[in-house]
Length: 235
Image 1 (cartoon, rainbow, N blue to C red):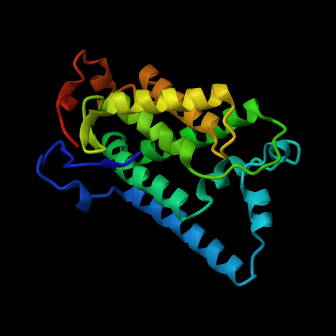
Image 2 (image 1 turned 30 degrees about the vertical axis):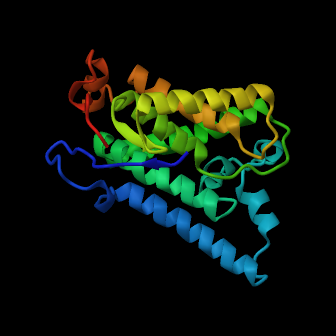
């Protein structure tokens, strides 16, 4: 879904252009994902690395993750991507929504939230298909967790979708409906729709119940009946 943004309103500076801004942990997550993708692509291109071995060792293979004690796969799968479009899409949304979330949470809480959504989505995917042998890869669970979190914290921020301004809460509602439909219909498109739905759910429930940042700014904003200082702010 093509999404364009205008400016991000910082707590102290409402005029800073979003394009020139990226937070510390988001930057390093983007770098890490990019480096992993390039190293694997280059080495495999010259026959120095077996892609199948990488996918089966570091991708999430549900039939092996517990049976063969490959628990690390829940985390390492977040850094593997199936192509440049897959990588670029995830990193774009990480940049946009991750920057918003890290500015609100702070670095440590953001990293915990990011991996909790990603690993949690992988665990739920395992519960849905525990005998699956096809490796699951990508950071989509974590990214959808960020998107769901932003919809709770910044519901009225707006983005351009196909040239029209749409509030984040509506974007998330539409995406959620699409993903749930794909899950129910059993769409065979090679996309982990259950991972997407799980990421949404984990992120939203985590924030709504204020398990982690009970005393943080985000909790105060959630408790506000009108969304606090984030009402009517455009991205």
